[in-house]
Image 1 (cartoon, rainbow, N blue to C red):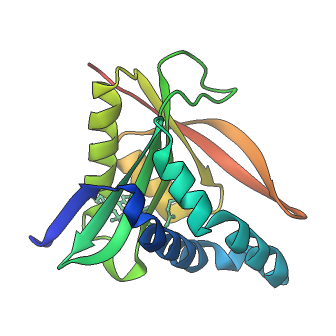
Image 2: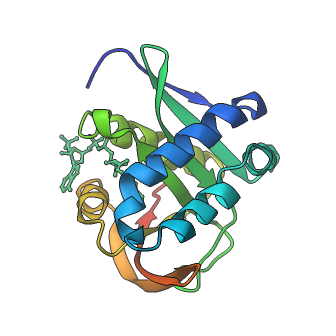
Length: 177
Ligand SMILES: CC(C)(COP(=O)(O)OP(=O)(O)OC[C@H]1O[C@@H](n2cnc3c(N)ncnc32)[C@H](O)[C@@H]1OP(=O)(O)O)[C@@H](O)C(=O)NCCC(=O)NCCS
């Protein structure tokens, strides 16, 4: 891992940078799922990564975002959503690792592991006993990463974006206190 990696908690004034990075990394990672559905992808990006939406999200007390920077350049981010359960993972002390993206130029450099560690540490501090996430079924790279760092697959779910029905795996991590 490079020594210049810095991970910092995001504040509302990072909304614009996060909206741009979120949009770019989503496209990098998932544009192939929208083959022949370009308009659906564009609509999703327009609706999801607006400055207003990201700023509102940053201000919600249950949400925490971290930014990963290398040599001052923003190259990744992750989001923890507290008190967010799933039908396969219910309870009062459940959190969600809702987003994690590393720029394609930095994949495999240890940034993802560092972001997940910060999320898990913060979830423990907030007295979560379990975290869950959803990962696209075809995203073998991310699924392999999560398994490698101790998450386990507990089942399947679907999510619609426009006319597309996407199939996801639900994975969990039990947090020992
Ligand atoms: C998934 C993602 C966050 C992982 O981050 P990363 O920075 O590439 O991962 P790291 O370099 O920190 O890898 C950490 C460890 O997992 C291992 N690993 C990574 N991918 C793996 C895989 N597919 N199978 C097995 N192990 C894997 C690494 O070898 C490393 O092991 P080590 O620390 O024991 O040497 C990143 O690849 C990414 O952003 N992908 C595109 C967007 C995406 O798919 N996001 C997830 C949406 S659910």
